[in-house]
Image 1 (cartoon, each protein chain N blue to C red):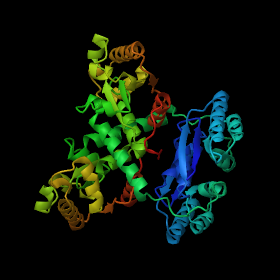
Image 2 (spheres, rainbow over the protein chains, first blue to last red; image 1 turned 30 degrees about the vertical axis):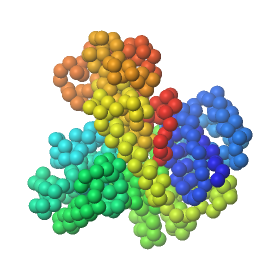
Image 3 (cartoon, rainbow over the protein chains, first blue to last red; image 1 turned 45 degrees about the horizontal axis):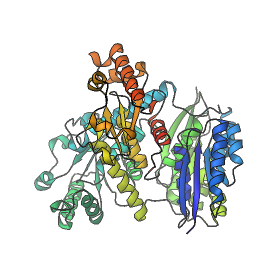
Length: 274
Length: 274
């Protein structure tokens, strides 16, 4: 199968171009894309270098490259437009219409992090990340009174990455607590969780998938046996049902999806926006 | 100032719509936006509910709402198009052109995480996150031989969130090591770092900003005095220069920008893409 080169060009990090570009490319199955990000293209010289690089790559390939760009300066956009490939100018498509609606010209300044609003957002995300780290895996802090949500589930069900993602993407205070033999035997929630029952959210996962994940970590011992994994998941789900804890099966979901479903289901508000 | 309602509608998490929408909105200064995400709009009923909700909100506002949507199904797009506001259909603008270029019809299936490629990406991001956690703050693992990059800098210069972001967004193995009195007094790098000098990347930050960040954490004591902060930053930058360690001033940057600049400057390859 022929590979198709895809470039993401941005005067900033390229995250916006990558995110949208990837969403669009997943709509075309069976194609093989080789993706390259060219960030911080913020001068005419750099834009011309980017075009030269892309055009060079195009010479060796069967198909012309696809170029996604998010550039705010007209002059840079004009340079990229000359590329020998399909150029999808993400900002061009929407900025004019949005400006008309808002009755304002776009500033055409790269959307850099600056000003107190952004510093405030930065601090909130850092604080939320520190909270997630201090309250990871039932950790010492157990500062659950300020938590927005407390994830519960068996080992390796996705609690830690989900908490970190909620913190870094949305500034949400997410703690997590692992369910173990202790809870399964007693059939009750520990006091520290029972006190905050309305904040609990459960994660579960298909047994085969959990086994696969656990084996990567520790390939021998009871931890990753089919029997143990099935037992733990069954008991965890029993607890979720007994105490009316909402939960989600993470088997088919990416971290972004799990995080988004938790916010959607709990109504917890984002403290910052990407 | 009048507030303007902004809705992000998606058949998935809404992250793509939020990311692009936010990039575009930052081009219009001085406007006050109230942002609401409506994720998992994946049926005609839900699409109609979303339209009703947006139209209700529009009644009380001076200006009509702005709606960004990423929906792959034509029928759902058609329903959202009827909304009483400015509708920016992100996929509609690009899918046709991309399909023509690739000589393939888009699948029109929501771009869900599925298949081994996505499980593989999930595992890589989790493993990289575990690596970052185990190798945080010069932590016990010090498994630097498999690190892609090792961030060095004084306390609170942004090392931990940057490592976590590199792991979660790109699957990159990033460790971090705090520079302290020990290194400043000796003027040399500890052996554990010297052995991996080509992987080191420094973070620095403006003294005032660092003081502000440290004060949030611990408001009394030497840790956040102007003198101490200036001393540490000066000494850290001396070390960077003495040992030819590339570094970046994070003062004006978001976590995304710091991460992106590190990849751009070091040439470390993304192991997964968003």
